[in-house]
Amino acid sequence: MSELMASADDHNDDIALAGEYALHLMDADSRRAFQARLDAEPALRALILEWDEQLVPLAENFAPQTPPKTIKAQIEARLFPQAAKPGWSLWRLLAGSGLAAALAVVVLLTLPQDPTTAPFTPSLSAQIAAEDQSLIVLASFAPETGVLRIDRQAGAAIDGRVLELWLIADGAEAPVSLGVLPTEPQTDITLPATLIPAITGGTLAISDEPVGGSPTGVPTGDVLAVGAVVSL
Image 1 (cartoon, rainbow, N blue to C red):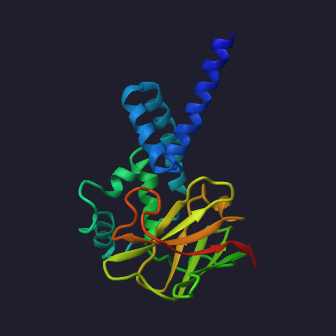
Image 2 (image 1 turned 180 degrees about the vertical axis):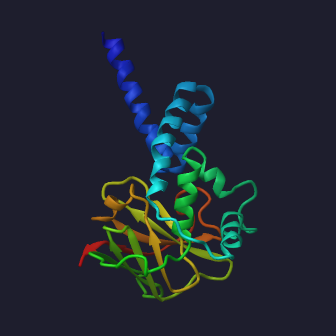
Image 3 (image 1 turned 180 degrees about the horizontal axis):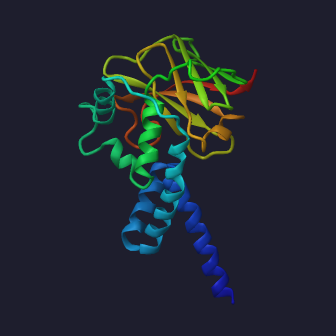
């Protein structure tokens, strides 16, 4: 009986780990260890497929929009930056989650949204600022629509680098990337439904990263600014 209980506990642990892997909630070391298990454990790969099937329908909640003619070039430039480290691409980062849902999230996170599609009524905000005020970014968030509005009031990325925005949820062991900030000072980021609850009580941070963003899923450069999310 104890062996059966232990086996059931292990299976439940694997289900949870597969979910963290699919949602990219693992830190770099945990992710590499999990990927090593995938090569040898077919049952674990089956759990990933089950999570994929559950995540793909999330993309159905996005209203269809006609993209501008330049959209393809912008996506290719963001996904395959020439300055990225050899052998790395965002497709590798997205391996393990539903491709359709992941691509939808990438487009929403990296491209400015049309503010006329829905009223913006934020109830949460954060001032993400460096200690010396060299970088100041105001963020406001509307949970009903999942829109995070970014207004960079001071500072910018240095040449050959980018600013990447991170969410550190309350009690989380690792940050989650919300995408690379554009060169324009204002932009809207639409968060996936899975991250909306994590904003409340969390912290937003901005790190200095190579073009294309962190290749590891966690900040690799200096953390330049942080700010707690508070209610308006």
